[in-house]
Length: 135
Image (tube, rainbow, N blue to C red):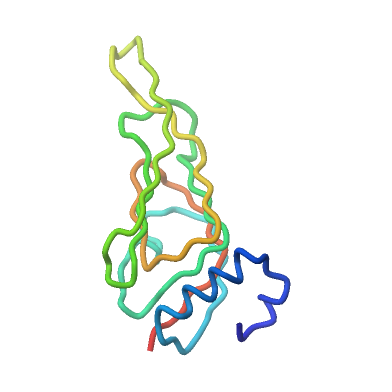
């Protein structure tokens, strides 16, 4: 770890750093704290020159009520292949529309790495972590 930010890291975060930084040859590490819309953010666009080390990720739908689509998060590896997906939904029956809908609570992820993400239904995110620029 080349930065003093990692001195007080948890054992899980130190392991994450060792695994993620060993995957690639990188030349810069940039701390990132982002709160805002998922759409249009740098996290949804793939580039072969970046890898994110995420200490905390929070996704939410930013409103209350049921949605037609189930909420999900997918993360991708450095080859742009899907490596994981998460679903956190509670199906509810909408008696007015006579249809199945979903309540999607906040999705919280800690200590993950990815090159990009895709989301369904979630519109707001909070990211705390680092971007490695790949050589």
